[in-house]
Image (cartoon, rainbow over all chains, first blue to last red; front, side, top):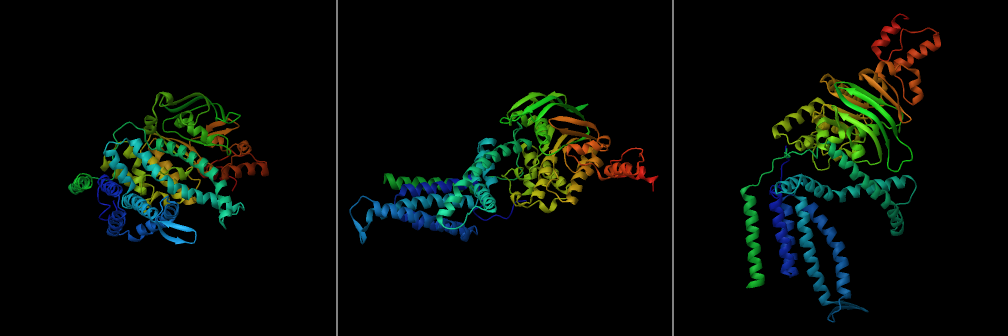
Length: 250
Length: 281
């Protein structure tokens, strides 16, 4: 019944989460932007390619990088309090320390964000929920966690529907930034109210599906931890400890 | 034995000025198929929510009266206990997807997972219900990709797979084409044959007259008629409550009005209509 999975998708979700977290934390602790940019990011892209998600992954990453980099480099580069000017264009001075600080910050953000993105790109959410339950998380807790993760795409979908409904009533929703903003704010109230009622409906629906029956739940999906999953976790920890020793003790 | 009993139920929604239902009392015997009819907004869905215990557990407001399931007060039962005994299919097909399953097969099986059933049995029962409802073609589809009608059938399958003894079904065919509607009624007929207790809210009166044992008509907060389907659906005054009559009943009433002749009785199903009109042919 399970669809054919890629090599990364086959890893047990929690093992994968450990690797992702180790990678992200290492990038944060390393402190050098080159680790994030030249090791973590290429590694993430390589893993995504192994999974056959090179294009969808890089597309999302590049999209996020352009937006984040623009803001961070402008703010850090121009408004850093340091004196060392890297480039001077008329009265605008780009500070060297600001650029370095922006590089460090963006490398951490992209390492962390990219890792999390890769995790969700390669993990079936139901598998993740089951693995959390098997790790001791409550049935209710894991369901709420999963539902919360799904809220963002649902919000986006719902907002589109509301926008279309408003357009059908003659409200201008397309055009310049001002027009779009004018259309955006009136959409928030119906979006929030309908989302709240949706949560109520979801609770009732789940009750009709025996959600709160007090028995040990079973799973249709087979999800077992393999030896390779343990090896991945242990190796990640060993590498992380080696990194910590190298970074802080040696 | 009574499967369901409603005693003097009155309910008002939290911000409403008036009661939506007042002093509603009726009971449903085990294996009986009761249809609840009435104009839009008369409180049919509210009544379903009361029967299932969602009112007053989830929807607050002013609630008076008692509901008994298998002669046990619903207040003494947990939501889980009620879920095992009473299946509920909602009117809105778009809220009935759990959101945590990636295929129709897993979506339908979700209730059985919650009941802690063995994996093999889950597969067997889910397979069977999908075949019974002729939904095999949907089994690998993602639930959110389904149309309203498909979701409605998935919702019905998701509840039927749990095999509850009492079924409350709120307008299960509102998004379905005529053929699929007939299929749903056929399934309901099979459920009745299995001695399941069915409470159905529907507007498709011809099908109700064909399949239901009893009809309860609600109007202006109260039960107006509660009798055998063939008796209620042969009464002309039913139409004044915003409920249509079966085509054959309308034909009988018009025949009497136009010819001045009195029929043996006003038929509400095709079979009766044939025998009633035979002597005039």
